[in-house]
Length: 222
Length: 222
DNA sequence: CATACGCTACGACAAAAGTCAGACCTGCAT
DNA sequence: ATGCAGGTCTGACTTTTGTCGTAGCGTATG
Image 1 (spheres, rainbow over the protein chains, first blue to last red):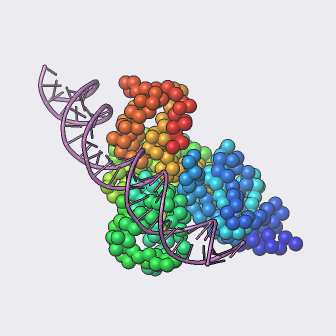
Image 2: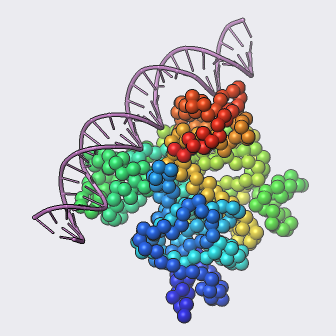
Image 3: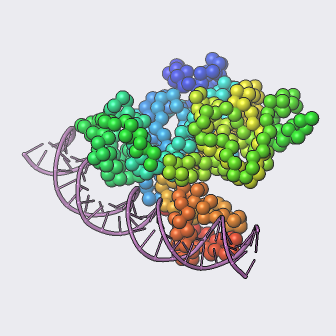
């Protein structure tokens, strides 16, 4: 009956090392939920009650300022998890808000269920250690970006990261880029024009063409 | 003979759950090292070969920009560890540079020794999970600070954090504060004067007096 | 006592970032 | 076709941040 749920559980890489038995138990306590595009899944600052695993769709993890500006911390897809850190820290609350990008399906486990699961399964804690570690490295990079680089530099780096070959195909609106870079749309627009004027890239309908990767890398450290 | 080393090992909270036997093994492979004030312990970007545990003194973890500006990620004291994340991520290099603040003594373990130790000891991996989790939360806060707050706001928050009651006793130079806030001395100076002019604090010889905590908290979100 | 040094204060300036308003373009729904 | 909405381009303007040079002040050192 809960066939679907079991299949979803098996598709989560973090759960790869679990036994059939544990998975079966999990399928009894995990909740499956689907959110419409743009829905708020989790509000930063609220007490932490559960952890989440993405089955389908995408989730945007972000912080909000008092003036309503956003900073995106990550955009996660199927198989990835969020809100897994606070359960390990007593009294911690949700570190950030999360919203569904497209239609998004998640599995959730209550905080204490998750913790006892981790205690019992060495494989799982190993996997989470790897996950946490790479998130730490990623956040450290983000901090350096924000503290030590100009918007123009951050934009150059961002485009290089997003680029698939010479092209950035995905339809990024300037607003989306802005929240990833911790700034506002207008400034992204100016920075983009600046890079175009410098001959480093060209903007076409629906995509951006990187004309000079080396030039962009030079821009990217500052 | 390696009595000192064993005693040092026992003083590291992360190792609290280890058996005598394991500690003994560790005392054979761990290296003890002391650095003079200001010495570079670890260079960011170099391949990761070892993890570190602080026995005495303090270590400043920071990133450097191309222009030589710094951003401090953390200042750690006895019992705390650094460079423990990269071993869990294949190919990862040291995420940041580390230097000794005062005279500082550390224990080091080779990366692979550390990893097999973690694999064998559930207690240890549990402790590291907690450590990583709180670092993640801390870094997330830092990102929000840098992305969404002005220097003045960050300074207000910083002072509130550092304050012991109404006083910030430690002798922070403006330069030190600047590298914690991701900016430069001059700007910290201006921001400080601004807060003084607003009547929120007073600067005395060797310490700062917070006159209006609520006012500072109001300043701190922006 | 003189000097050197580290830290701070201050003003002037330049660059970067944020804010605002108006106009345009496109696709879509009425 | 009309109107609307979302996204973009543009320029003007303000504020914030970073940079520079100079000067003051205290402590430590000779």
